Structures are given as structure tokens and as C-alpha cells.
Image (cartoon, rainbow, N blue to C red; front, side, top):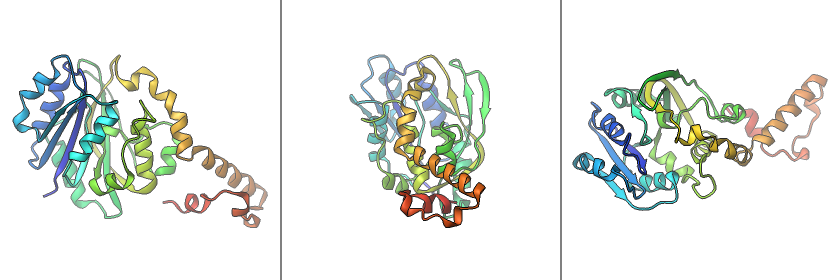
Length: 267
């Protein structure tokens, strides 16, 4: 049986954490390892978590640098075959989500190292806003889109081996967009399969990182770190030389663009 590790990180999350926990513990699939990493909450978060502690595999409450530092802590505890992250204000949309995901994982071609699906945006009080459907993408598609609009972080289920291979979330460098960077690094090295499953409810409210605008401040450095500018230049060169019929005459290496070969051959 495939074991799924689910990590929830939280800090002063008493308004929503119980809904998140219930959405995990109500899953019909049995082999789930639930890990909660709390950053030393001072509201009622810890008391809420303790109500369900017998069904939580790992619960740690201690100060951390930020949510990505907490995710890294959770990753170290995870023993599942696949790892997912569900934020403390988000929910799984039905009790069969993990069963449906595992069903897809069992049939997933070996070339893929994880799957991702759809999310539904919901208001602070849980009202439906809209469905954001994913589709099959690769690293280049994500990078050139400039925004992480095709792969919802909370819909990803990544093999543990792939998580180990790509390393930790860079929490000290990126305070609001480390998940964006992490997904780009994942897709740069591995393939993940899109599945048409409504996986999670993504809560949009005033204090979320995504709605605060902070994430946009870091996107440029994330894109640059992962080669956006270089790829953009390569694409412009390709279009230019194809239009003039000179592309076959170019010695790419002499132009100093080392990644062109992998860029052109990436599937």
C-alpha cells in the first residue's frame, strides 16, 4: 500500500486549523501519516491540535524562521512514499481525495515523480469563488509563464526520493516565494503528471501570503535564479535566426549559451 505523508505548518491559526485537520483525518484512505509543525503559536492553535493528537503521527511546536523552515522540519519526519503539503488555512475538498490520488499514483507511468491536480479558491468563510484547473506542463512552461498558475502547491504529491533529491525549501533566501522556487526546481529535474482531480480548497483572505502581494516581490529573483532570462534570450535567438535562415550555421557554444541543448531537448 502506498503511504502518504501530509504536512501542515501553522502559526496562530486558530481560525482555520480545525477545518484543515478534519479534512485530513476524515479521509477514507487509511495509510496516511499526518505531520503538524507549529511555530510556537500563542493563540488557541495548540489546544485545537491536541484535541486530535492521538490521530496525528508527529506534532511539534517550537519557533521557526518561517513557514518554509517549518515545512523542511516536517519533511525530515516524513516516512511516506509520497509527500504533500496542506497549509493551515486550506482543506481537502472531499473525504475521497487521497483515495483518488493514490489510485492515480498506482497507474502513474514511471517517468513521473509525482502528480498534481485542481484547486478551488474559497473565501475566508469557505464560500466557493472559482475552480483553477491545471494542465500538463513542463519546466519551461512554468518558467516562461512567470507565475505559478498551473501547479497548485497544495495539490502536489511528490515522491519522497524526488524531495530528497531536489533538497530543502530555501527559507532563508525566499520568505514568500520559496514554494514557487521549490516547484520550479522540481520540474527542472523531474516530470510530474497532471490529473483531473479537484484536490484542495485554497482559502483567499486578507492575511494570506499570496493575497498580500509579498510573493510578487520575490518572483523576479526566483525566475532569475532558475534561468528565466537566459531561456528568454535563447528563444529570441532561435526566432531571429530561424526567420533569417541562419540557425543551422550557428555554433551555439561559441555564443556562451550552455543550456541550449537541454532547453531544446526538454520534453
